[in-house]
Amino acid sequence: MPASSNRALPSLILRIDLDPECRIGPGKIQLLESIQTCGSISAAGRAMDMSYKRAWDLVDETNRICRQAAVARQTGGKNGGGAVLTPFGVALVARYRKIERDAASAVHKELEALRNDIRHPKKSMERDRDVKAR
Image (cartoon, rainbow, N blue to C red):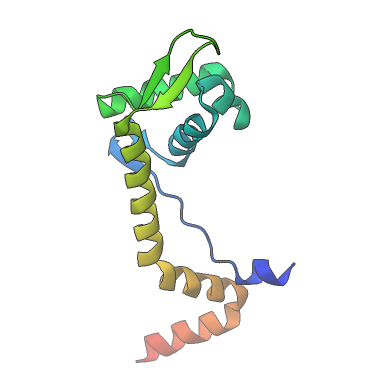
């Protein structure tokens, strides 16, 4: 195992459940970022190894969940149209990424402790025993 992977913290993945049926998570946000980069839903889907139908379904779901468009399609034209993030879509991605950073920062010490407990299980058991003895 490379030394850098020994030092890497466990990762925190954030999914926001707006209600039991409405979720915003890393996949939808990554798709929005890919649409912003690629300029179309189909190109974004290809970049993520996702079918156009799956990409379109996720965009449609995101727009429905948010009750406003995060993605706007552009029709026709010289290059055949495409898609762009709306101002709301840009703000949604930025807000999600800020929440993600803030959450990761809040649990950083606990992730370090978890990593150390996993790397050194005997020391972890000793710490637990010492805490119980107090």
